[in-house]
Structure formats: structure tokens, C-alpha cells
Image (cartoon, rainbow, N blue to C red):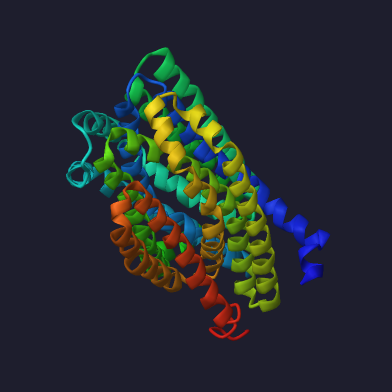
Length: 447
């Protein structure tokens, strides 16, 4: 164990995959932080509240369909481990077909979806107005957002994290520039934030398409007639089964995060805005820890495809160690500088005051949650969606909502306590299952 944790070769392998993903992942919440900072410095809290609710609705739609990225990464990593070029290409096309049609469905259902979301919110009239304005613009880029997820997942599955990194960095840089132009320069306020995000989505699609085209050219795959026949006649059962389980998992996760945002509106616009600031900082934590989880996805996927059980367990142990180290660093960062980070995002005195009261929950969150991010990557790599689904259902139904219900007299603290218990439960259930199954070796026999 000691030799593994301090092996130069193993650690270089981990960081060569994880570091580009951490950089690109952190650029995503940093983009959200830029949006929050620009909107948060407008004259009233309802601007920030409207963007918070609108972003939650868009994020919920995207993350509910995030199985497109996850399943593509896991299955592509397994095909890459088996050196099956035809299967890799088939997974890319199948994922793209699913993504395009699911994106169209979201666009067509935008009005009932938005009406249902607003019926669940106790937001003020001003917050609801700006929420609707934001969503009505952002929703139109949903098909290409989902296509981006598939292409990103495919690139990651083929061990190309640096390629994925540049795709996200370029797109997010465009978003920041457009944010400054539309919000501060043209004074478009909330609409400006939405149009900037649409511009970034289009940029990401163009960059990803170019990078995927280069990879396909390098593979020199020439059996396209056979591939198209397979794509439309067979092979969907496995990907749909995995996607269905991950969809249920994502639905539960979004239910908890959406409840956090929407229920906070009961405590007023300022509390809603404060939670929006803290949840944006939480995204910074999650995307950072997800960088190690992406390494686990690829390594576990390839090892599982080859039935290399020792390699698989070594990847999980090394990933767990570095995830724990990063969690401690994040906790110390927010304990020391959390209030200063909040001040960067908003200058509204009441919002800052409320956010500071709940910073302790944010600071401790990495310690409870790093295991769930890691094991999500492990189970995605092994394409075992059922275990992820079961863990998430248990943690949502039997942990999050009971904790909130019992503690609801403590106001907004009850929401953060329930979220902490939820994260810890996910870490524990998946971790115990992995140990019990001896790293999946009890479920499959070496071939």
C-alpha cells in the first residue's frame, strides 16, 4: 500500500489524467462564479435570485441527462481497453443520436417544464420574472449542450483529458468575455448572462466537433456502412439500461439540490441569493474532486474491460487517497477564506451576512462528500449503474428528506445539515458495496 501511494509512476499516471480535468472542471464553476459576481453586484437581490432559479432549472435539465456523458465515458473506456475501434465509434454515434433527440424534447417541453418549476417555488414576483427570462433564452441551446456531453465523454473515455480541457477552457473564456460585454457593457442584466451562456455552448460544440473529427481521422475507421447499420438496428439495450439507472441516480441528486434552492425561497430573497452563492462555491468543490473521479472512470473502465482486478483496485486506492487530500485542502480553504470569497461574489450586505452564517457547512462538506464523487467515477467506469441508482435512492428517500423534516425548525440550517448527511450516505453505501464485492471481482470472472 505504501509503495503504491508513493509510486512516482502511478502518481504521474494519475495526475496526467486528472490535472487537465481538474483545470477544465474548475473552469466550469468559475464561469458560474463570474455570472454570480456580475449579477450579484447589480442593485437588488432578485436579479441574483432569478439567475439562481433559472440556472437551477437549466442545470437540472442538463444533469438529469448527464448520463449521456457518464455512460459514454464508461463504455468507451471499456472498449478502448479492449482496443475495439468499431465499438468506440458506435458508442459515439449512438450517444449523439440520443443526445440530439433528447435535446429537442427538452426544447419542445420548455413551457410546461418552466410552469411546473415555478409552481414549486415560493419565489417573489421579481425573482420569477427574471427566472423565466433567463430560462427562455438558455433552453434553445440544449440540443448542442447534450451533444457536447457525448463528445466530452467520448474523448475522456479514450484517455484524452487535455483535449477535453481545451474545449472547456475556450468555451468558458468566451462566456466570460460575453458576460462582461452583455451585462456590464450593454446593460442586458439577466438576459445578458443567458445569451453569454448560449454563445459559450455554441463555441464548445464547434471546438468539440473539430477535436472529435481529428480523433476519428486518426483511428482510420472505414466500416461506416456496417457502423450505421448497427447504430440503428442493434446495441442500444446496454447503453439504454445503463442510462436509465444513471438517469434515476441523477434525478435523485437534482431533487435534493433543487429542493435546497426552491425551499430556501421561503426564507426570503436574500436567503435564496445567499444559498445561490454558497452552492456555486460547492460546485467549485465538486468539480475539483470530480477530476480524480474522472481518472477513476477511465482507469477502472479499462481495467474492468481487461478483467485486470489488481490494476482496478490500485486505481481505486490511489484515487481515494488523493481525493481525501484534496477534500482536506478545500475544507481548510473555505474555513480560512470563505467569507472573502463570498464578498467577491456579492456586495449586497444582507446576502453576505446570511451566507457567512452557513459557511461552516460549506467548509465541512468536502470531508463528507469526497467518497461519493470518487465512487461515482468507479461505478461509471465499471458501467454498474444499478448500484449507483440504489445508493442514491437510499440517500435521498431515507436520509436527506428525513433529516430535513426532523430538523426543519432550524430553518436554513436544516437544509445544509440534510445535504451533508446525504453526501455522507452516498459515500458510505457505495464504499461498503465496493469493499464487500472485493472490487467487482465477486460479480464477474476473469476472461
